[in-house]
Length: 255
Figure (cartoon, one colour):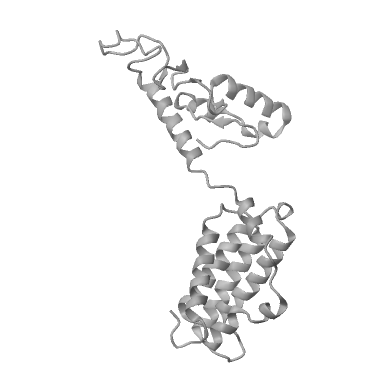
């Protein structure tokens, strides 16, 4: 059950209301009045609820409440078992299938909340506000070490660790550039230019980058395009793949 951080409201699809949605005029929701009517109707039917509350409407449209056992009960005499006198709850004991569905729904919601990735902003800030390298250090770029054969293992490990760190971030972390430090954005742009050199080759005949490292650098570029989340970045990634395809056709081994 995905929830909205902006409104604190989550959507609960109910099978008993499927026919209603077949008749809903979605175009009416484009107007303010139509959207308000649909919102109020969904609230009334129990399709919109606040997360973490102790009362829901089950699939039969009956109000349920969380009992002492942590399970949901509607209090109706709908059970066939004798241990609970056929009553769903109301505070403990067996519950009916519609209320069991609410239990499962609540478990899924708690699991989603538990598996939420940590916020990316502190991690980005920890990368940004470090002591900046000197110009002489920047001049010794990783590409130079690749092509000169120095510290090749270290360069490969650095690329792989960078890819794993980037994959651990939520998608489209860099989409809202206004919320990201300009220093960090500049680092990303420089990294993209460097990675393109690694993927496409130096172009000055000073050596060859290992093929596995080129693949890792390509994965990094594609991950950065996903993190930016803009159409222009996705198109740049597609153009790069086409450029690699054309370049590969000119080589003897084009795997």
